[in-house]
Length: 143
Image 1 (spheres, rainbow, N blue to C red):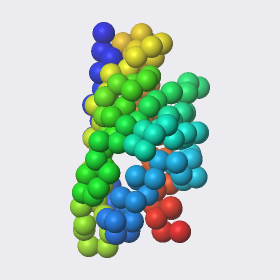
Image 2 (image 1 turned 120 degrees about the horizontal axis):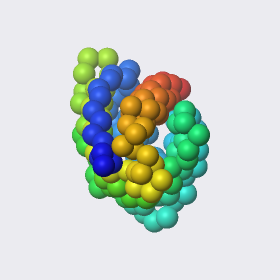
Image 3 (image 1 turned 180 degrees about the horizontal axis):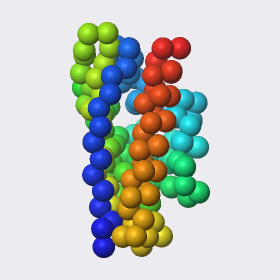
Image 4 (image 1 turned 45 degrees about the horizontal axis):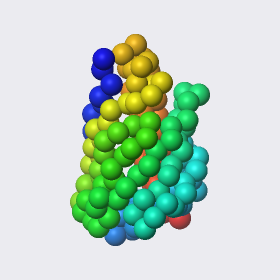
């Protein structure tokens, strides 16, 4: 089955690297600016439980463990309904910060069983999730 996904995208935000990095590493406040992140609970100093729901009517339960918390790389290991990692590499550009996003995950559970048939829909759903991140992060760092 095709349960593995790799995503990559880049965008620029009009804020300094330090501000973007601080916002990305402040997991507990994600629900305030990232609409698809519904709940976050701190488990430990570098670990949080996160519930995400994008456009599809399915909520992901994830555990995120900080791997890197200092710019230029912000990275978490992901476990739960997804297994893998998500990474932002930040670089200073004229007028702000360039974010290069990479994620490699394997889908587990019910979604894993469906992913062979629903791959295009799950990819589209992820794209909606990341659009929420991009737009919400831009609003947050400019506020």
